[in-house]
Amino acid sequence: MKKALFAVAVVALLAVAAQAGEIKYHEWPCTPTPQEITTIPVVMDVGYWVKIKDQDKLKIKLKQDAIHDYSGCTNATVETNSSITFSTSISKAKDAAGNTVVAGDYSSSVSPANINAPGGTITVCAKIAKADLSKVPGGTKDVLVGTVTVKVVPTAAP
Image (cartoon, rainbow, N blue to C red; front, side, top):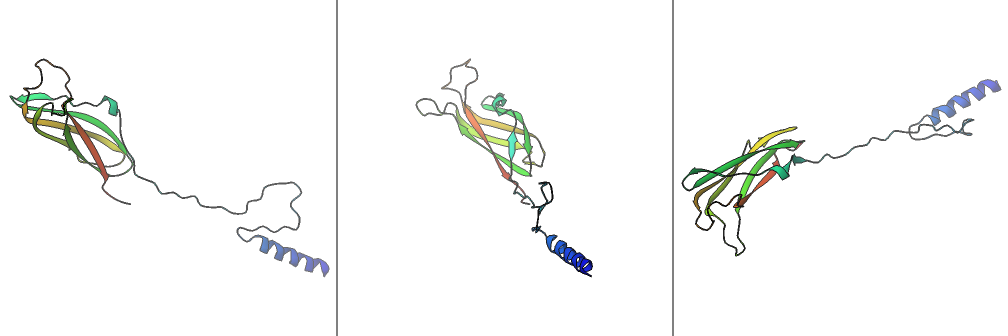
């Protein structure tokens, strides 16, 4: 009878000890073996990221389309983890005196404007219409006349 009562007590003790997140032993097992007590989920918020590869190699070289009109484009490889929309703006370069290097009507564009993960290739273009070349010496090479800024925004939130 004592043995049966002892067996019931051991079973009851083990049932209590089996509750999640809690171990109750009167004595630890013979060897100091780690005992699993619980598992904890690990979660994180994943942010947006966009990368334009080889940015230092990108340059838009303008070529003459008409007597006072110039345009050019460059391709850029994009890597991203989300759907994104691109836009551009262009600023005119200034000389040391603060004057525009080449006056005219500047514009820029990007195509395609939307890219989905994992990325793709975009084409960034610049144009100068009604370019006034009177302040730049003829035969000058690689004159910095402007800078195109590429902007990006996520198009869909999870």
